Amino acid sequence: MDRPVPATLLSLFRQGMFFIPLLFVLGRLFGLPGINFTQTTADYLSIVIALFLLGRALGKQRADSAAQEG
Image 1 (tube, rainbow, N blue to C red):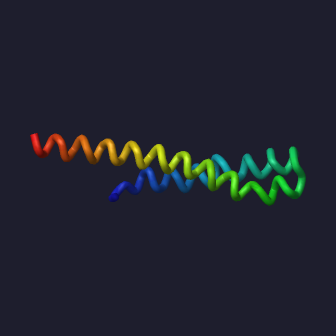
Image 2: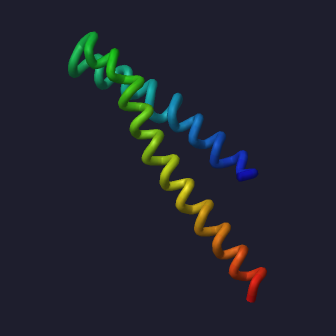
């Protein structure tokens, strides 16, 4: 969709904002099973961010196509 900035942000959120803090928090709370679930939890949180970014991109695309038509 030619949107490199949101793609980069999503990658940064997944690794920096979600994975590393979750590694410490879940490891402290649940021990080794918490560390095992860190990747899955970070992926699910990334899905939420990706859906938000997708909604914004589709909304902008609809607005751009409506402006071209009218």
